[in-house]
Image (cartoon, rainbow, N blue to C red; front, side):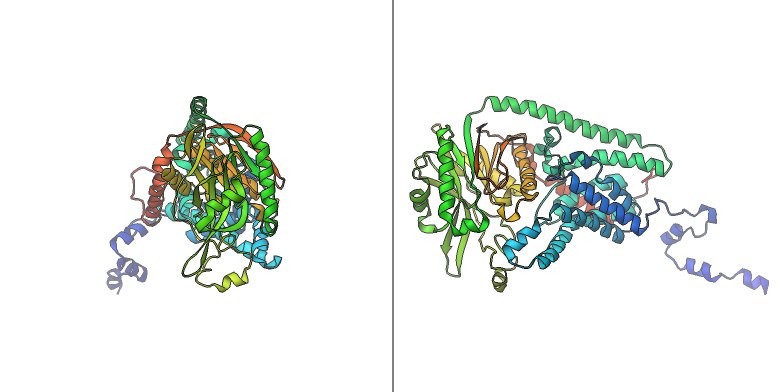
Length: 553
């Protein structure tokens, strides 16, 4: 009987024999117990501890961001999130990323409550619910980051390299209602922002990731009782140092370019009309803009920029230029760029356009640009054309149509006509869109016409300005930004603010700038490199890393 039993397989051995050969190897079938490879990698933190660290990252991100401006925190804001995600399964990592992103959004974008109350007419409690929903959606950017990081590290790819790839993919591919970039945390530090002319705000953000990764390795080496990864520390230090050196060289070269360029004395007008007052009393808005423009003209200003829809009354398309000359620009005596509202009656319905126009100092309106990147809820309701009843439920929401052409505004000064790229409202925080506009218009100046009054006296106007200054760096042009209620500013090609207004005051500002032309690496390359990185992240999220002899993950 014993001899018979010796030839039989036990139940556990039979189960192993039925496995595929590669699975036998993975489980150590046929190997001594001591030779079976134990699962490697750090032990994940329990849920409450991981959640606390994820939320802490969201708070640090918010404090570092424009509006709060504790910018040195940008060097450490990702550190808690790293340890929250370390060793976590993809599902939990996704939730932890969402928690970090939602925390940052609720704190940083709480001004959405004011906007929703203004435009929707909904009660405050319902607006708060919508804000949590919107901020959770926006926080999905960090959920994507967490998922990509966990998936790729689970498949054996180097965790810190994956961290950088997940950062790039989350900043590029996740669709946002209100776009933002980590780079805006250092908008006040010119030495750290100049690489934007090479790779846009994503490259600036990657530079900021370097000190985060170095600090992560310092902490991790103590937790895991291992030596520092000196190659990683050196690489992070080199990346950060090269960015600083590049920033210094770029600033010096820029000063040389500016010195040889044609001068322009430019001014901006901030009318500061209440959101409803603009609609109810358009004549008062026009009076304010004309009075402040006269003051600027008398100071020798050659070009004046007004805000978005500074001319509030709607004008029919067929005689818009003639009407604007007679009612608005005829007696200004200075070249002007201003915002208007133009409508056209089509066979299916009436179409309204949020428009920027330019006029000569003689008052002739010469060119027009219709806004293409419309603001959800403010200028249109998502699915509103499909379900028109939504506009009845939200009576304060606009129903504008997108423009179809990227034509430059034409401005004549000193006997020469110059191309100007116009961006309306939050088109100025969309790098790829602005790149398309600049490529199409070949401008010597970029202007932005905005109305941020619906957000109230909150952090939003300052966040908006900080995000927009990167357009000046990416294209090495001066950038003039006029808003109805602030913050209006004149920005140099290094992203430095030459002068700015305060919020909710009626005033004007002026400065000497330069007409500049040329191109940058970012204009030529755009986000192509970042799309390749994002594609690579999708691949490594699903493909296991091939075994490398003697290497560690």
